[in-house]
Length: 134
Image (cartoon, rainbow, N blue to C red; front, side, top):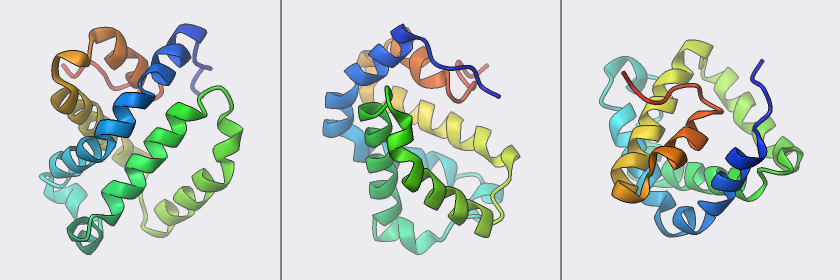
């Protein structure tokens, strides 16, 4: 089980809210572009949700909600439960999540450029355990 995030990490994530408000959809769109380049992972997704933009929008809102609620993640329990139910229904397995984490972290770095400092990347990687990519 992952350890709780420390105060510094939570503070950095909260400080990213304005960037997520401005660039969240660009980040998740780039994340899905990266993720879906892998044919094994692409087959797990409903591509129509990519074409209409609903899945990137939904994820952008979820990431923003995570940052806004980092001090009270229980507020997101209902949303997380719905996501988990969808993932179980789609046979998403634990071994798939590192691909998502790598794609999301890579997209943050790509979209935010120099603003994605090592400190920011480390804070976002802590819940995923996936950064830096070797």
